[in-house]
Length: 243
Image 1 (cartoon, rainbow, N blue to C red):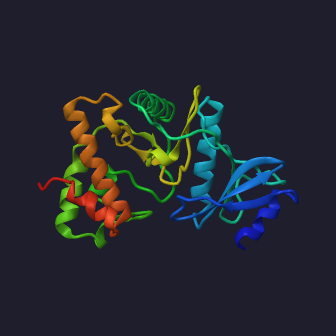
Image 2 (cartoon, helix red, strand yellow; image 1 turned 90 degrees about the vertical axis):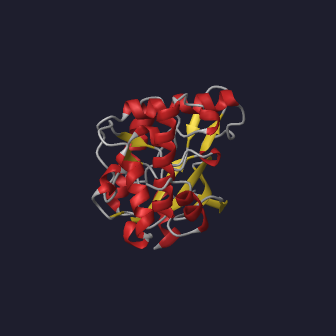
């Protein structure tokens, strides 16, 4: 159905223009009820989108600054792969203090979601010690030696507590104002070990040397596996130390 499904949000919805940054999805600026909004159209399953929209509503109720799903006129949080969300104002982090605020926000996300169920069809990094596939990950497509290195990095996470991780806290997915840190683009969020979110510029999360090394290696391995085999994933795999 494509963008025709946007009519489910009412006759006054206006599609204004595309937004950069969407890789797996088509993302546009919208106006809904006279207010700015964002629409994301993709091919994720209903179960996947129910998990994500439910998470965002929960986090909003807990006081985190996140895009909030805007229901259709009949109350659905998504329709035919389309999610419409509130627009978050703000800019990317620029200073060490900004990044420390980002780290605090990520840790609050992790605290609020301990024990959260896994996103349907996804696997966490430790799961991939024994599984070969999960959503966008297919270890069978990677070089065997690369898989060995990735699994060695993930093995260092065994036994850790899990929670929801944002999965991609890069500057383009952060909206900062004087009084809030907003996190957008939850397309990569899933349940995993929280330190994967905390490999931040300048070690803003204050991890000790060992913890930072474990997190950085596991994060590089994850990004190599989830993106394989574009140039970025090849670069990330090269950062994972040989066993």
